[in-house]
Amino acid sequence: MEAFEANRRGDSAVDDEASRQVRSRPVGALPEVEALPPLSSYRALGVFDEAIRFLRAAPSTLLGVTVAVLLPLRLLATALPGSPLRDARPDQLLDIFVGNLSSPGAVTAAFAVVAADSLALFTVATVYGEAIASWYSRQPVTTADLLLGSIKRSPSILLAWVLVHVIEILGALASFGFLAVLAAVFLVATAPVMGAEAAGPIASMRRSSFLAQSALGHTFFVVVTVGLGSLLMRVMIEGAPSLLGFEVFQVPLWLLAGVMDFVASVVVISFVAASSCVAYIGLRVRREGIDLEMQAARAFAPRARRQRGHR
Image (cartoon, rainbow, N blue to C red):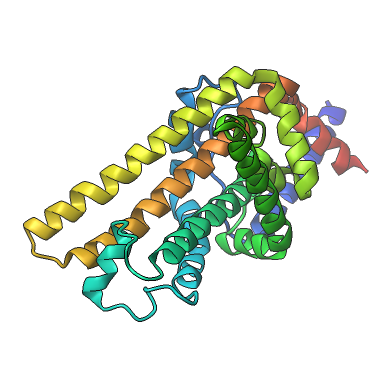
């Protein structure tokens, strides 16, 4: 009986120490395990649901990251030499936002905006990978921590983004687009791997290819369905509100188009980045059985805490 009481007091001391450590950590987002996407091999359409679940787990943190990453890149794109956005009158801005490429410099501006959104997507997916790895390991993380980490890794992120898109562009030129889609399938998890596993550009690309080999058909359908879904999402966000605001409330169309374009980019980038992280989780479950590993880690966590307390 005395031994039992001693063990109970020791466990209580360990739990108290763990509680003090948790309280001493900086306050950050730490969703409940039930709020995160379950560790499972998702169906292609199931990735949609789990991506939305992931975004709902900590919307202020995740959407805040997207806005903080996208906004400076968009501003930089509009400030490039030759961009009509620099000196255009408000009524001229509509030509750029609705895709009228007849204006001088509009091609450069349009390309710069697309490149900025693409780099923002890759960066956000990397940050989301770090967030989801922290949350599954039950470590709180703040928006500032995530953004600071992305700034420190920005050279690696930029290099990986360039390499991935060079491969996709070369594949598109060599095969009328088919090899570009195939490259996207193999490299779909590159950004989440960089964030979740703190890997370098080449290692992340190789890791993504290794994971995708276990389910090429499944990953292909994920890439296609997420791409089509994000396109439909952008059309719905930009189209109806802009038309309604212009016709009903008489808001200038150039202003509506610009605002709704940015809002649509934030939503679409967040959704696609979350989808890539969910696809990464699913591939790790299929290829490595990570769900069993984490279940075992949680099952034996109390024993590990007791052992640390008795040292």
